[in-house]
Amino acid sequence: MRLTPQKDQGLSQQLYIALRGWIESGELASGEALPSSRQLARELNIGRNTALAALDRLAAEGFVVTRPGAGLFVASLSLAETRHDAPAASENAQLSRRGDHLLAACAPSGGPHSTFAPGIPALDLFPREQWQRLLRRHQQRAPEAWLAYQGDGGVAELKTALCDYLRLSRSVRCTPGQILITQGAQQGFELIARLLADPGDHAWVEEPGYAGAQVALTAAGLSLVPVPVDADGIDLQCVPDGPGPKLIYVTPSHQYPSGITLTLARRLALLKAARDRGAWIIEDDYDSEFRYSSPPLASLQGLVDQAPVIYVGTFSKVLYPGLRLGYLVLPLALVEPFRRANARFHREGQYVAQAALAEFIDQGHFSRHVARMRRAYRSRQAALREALAPAVARGMTLSEGHAGMHLLAGLDSLGQERTLVEAGRRQGIALSPLSGYFLGDRPEPGLVLGYAGSPEVEIARAGGWLAQAWIDSAAPASG
Ligand SMILES: Cc1ncc(COP(=O)(O)O)c(C=O)c1O
Image 1 (cartoon, protein in one colour):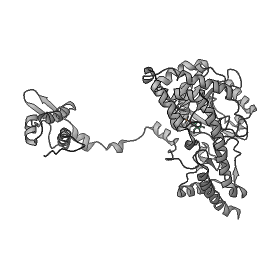
Image 2 (spheres, rainbow, N blue to C red):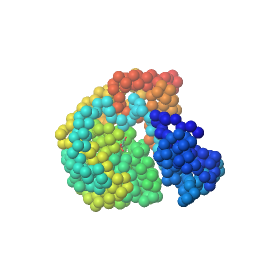
Image 3 (spheres, protein in one colour):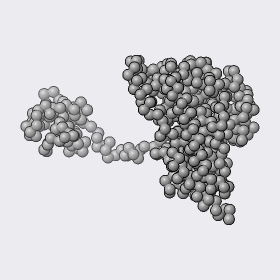
Image 4 (cartoon, rainbow, N blue to C red):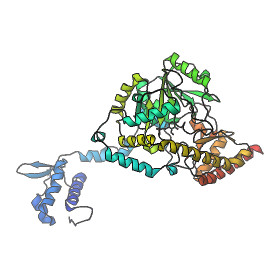
């Protein structure tokens, strides 16, 4: 054996690796004596401390044992069994039944975002420098306690700022104490599902609907009952017979993905249904800031006093998804249990980002950013409409797009949907099929076309391609 000095590996490390390798391969058998550090140093022409360091490490890790007065010996280990008889770890890497069930509900994440990725905001227009300045300032000022575990349900200033904002712009009935800051809406769904329902309970969900919330409900063992959405929103008349729900998940301001607004009559019916059945409504208000032809709608939570509603909000759309900040507005009686469970379950964090966000809101940057994004999204949506105009002229239907960050293109058949998604894949343009948002056996064909995350030129290019692909795919049917 010869050891030569190397830049990335000291002599002691080299010696350790060599000896450990021989022990693992069996070349140095159990019980065999090792040379002393003095012998090693002499024979390898290295310092004695270097040899000692390698031997000490092998001893500390249990590969060799010291017999007082006799020296170092290879430990008696069943390394061979681990090596030869046990199946390879990769063969063993099977998920549990629950894991398999859960994974079936988790579509693979689509890699780097593509032009029409739904739900991605304009990351290119986010005021990064201003945000960095705020982060830096709050990082410098952060009290030491913020570096430890937290249990307050979030930074007080953020809860106050949010509360003012929600009361004013969303007519949410709340006090700052009712707000629990979470790491995104997803964590809020998780907490609600685990704390307010038992495995086997039923949850009504919109059909089509949002997979993120559905995954959280499924993970908590709930049985999902898809309830159809029509032009007025979720239609409770269509609920199949069965046990009442514990939870009802809705997106009343802007149904995801159909874009429909839940009418007042349906809102009242929903509140009554929840009250009658002792169920909680989860109101997911994920993108209500982006309405283009009217002010944001009042929330369901604020419609009546003591509504059985947990309001869920997120900063993923207004700021950016990687921020992982969202919140729950909880009825007073649920504040303490939710806060305690969250602090143990998920741990609180991101207090510096929360403080920066509170200032971002207080200083008016938040509302200016929202106003700017509204203008940008309006013009990105216009670019998409313009690009798709040739297809629309030949019968493609597009949703009205009064709000939100995506348009829905209706298609004639699931076959056409498949053809377009496949053609998009070949072209490097990922298309979101509407049928993928259905749980039941009557999926409708369409495309969910996010437009917020891409500049107009990109939308024009990909939209132009899509219009032509639609015309090509529709051609055989029309003539
Ligand atoms: C309907 C809906 N709710 C909530 C969210 C936000 O989830 P999160 O805050 O976990 O990023 C999204 C994001 O895509 C969404 O589409």
